[in-house]
Image 1 (cartoon, rainbow, N blue to C red):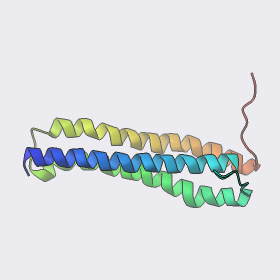
Image 2: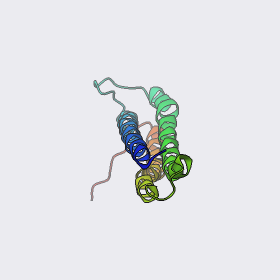
Image 3: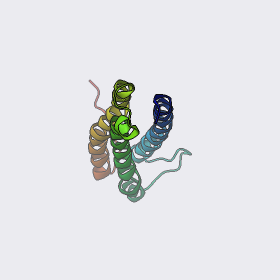
Length: 134
């Protein structure tokens, strides 16, 4: 594979991955917000049982999948020059480009743990988390 082809694969893969991650990010955050507030986007009240099901069947698998996809894409970028037979010219660009999906993995995984703690707390109490003044 020529350097030009490798560069095009790199650009196309970053574009596709970022579109996927942004769409997933919006979906997972929307689901989180519905679980925490107890309302759909249309203002329909959700039961506590429905919110728990949304957490277990929607939010948790989506968040884990986004973290895994980010990690897999970062690994793909690291190994792309080796797979393409080009080990010198675009290798630095692939390494720099891999920072974005690896950073996304850290965000989806570790910040997801924080979101998870909050959702479990809210779902266990059956209410909505409110911050204390002062």
